[in-house]
Length: 103
Image (cartoon, rainbow, N blue to C red; front, side):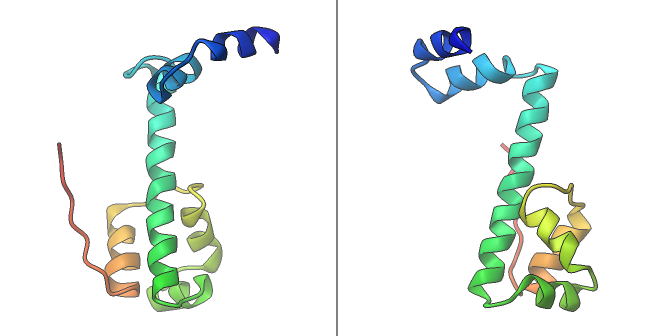
């Protein structure tokens, strides 16, 4: 445990922390982390939009023909989500518009 603490004491940026913990961009471990982080972020967007619509997970599930447990897994970043499901949840279920930007 001391070795980890010593390695972390030299870290000055978040990017350095990510490299120290998950490796450089493009490594398998780092790519897995980035995918999970994006899944978590999408879940947070869905959760926030659902709350802004004053809906429960159960109500959103009923409106979109899914299960509450599925909505919960998505909102907690524990489930991959297909684009068609993302569309259904946000546009059909919550009345929001989805746009994508590729950089």
